[in-house]
Image 1 (tube, rainbow, N blue to C red):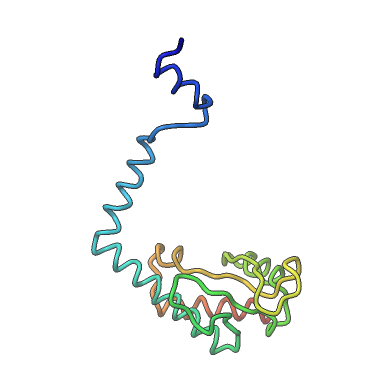
Image 2: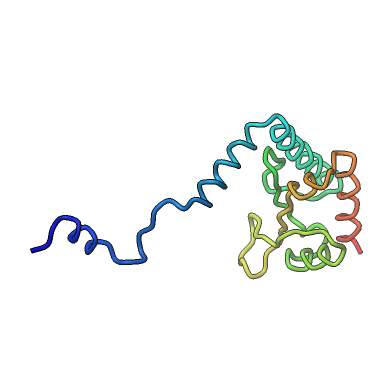
Length: 147
């Protein structure tokens, strides 16, 4: 007859159940400590300020933003106005070292032939860019799309 411990060990298939991993716990603890710092709060506010500036700058050039603005770190831009697809816009911007992702926008019939790109500001903010620098990024994006 099995004792209780043997029955418990047999109930769980080996390799499918694990305990807490110290590296995961340490990573979460480190992240929680960082997000409480005033520097992190300021960094997050700058990310949002940069995203809002990127959004308004592109709108001034006539691009449609799917949400008509942004309150978060990214935006979805309809690039049909520039006469390109999302995939073509992604390649154009990649060729001038601007990272983005092709993405569907409202009105698209197929995800394979999308009309939008997704842009975000965390990487730019991490590199120290502020709103006046974002104006230059907007100009680079617009010039890339219109050539």
